[in-house]
Image (cartoon, rainbow, N blue to C red):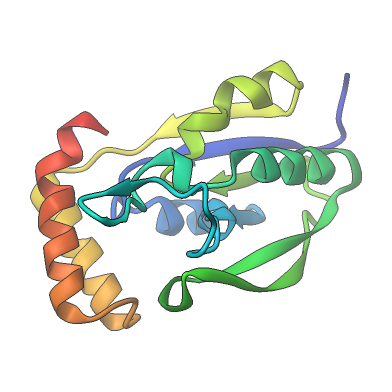
Length: 169
């Protein structure tokens, strides 16, 4: 099926610069991080007694793909707005590709939906960013502290865990 709009997926670890690069394209940008599951969702994965937000299972891939499909067909959709501090979707907002034949969808789990988007004829391209681990750690920590996403102690602990795990991403 031919769609009037197609998506470029941009993946990479948290703090790798996905949002910055997506914005630099000048294309409409869909933030896939807004498709996280709510913090009280019983299907959320856990590790060491806490929600594992780094697992793709903490993210609603089906809704993300359905939203991308609607954008590809119609050029507009209502998309969730996720508040990280509240661990939930707090509202929705209209998203419009403004007539552009291409739009970008970026997020740490974008790679999880490449094949489904390709199968549905939605995909224009898919890219993964990778920077030196130390640079990613510093960028992520600075962003998270500035945005007050969680308590500083939590952010540092999470950042160090992600630094150690990044080679597997």
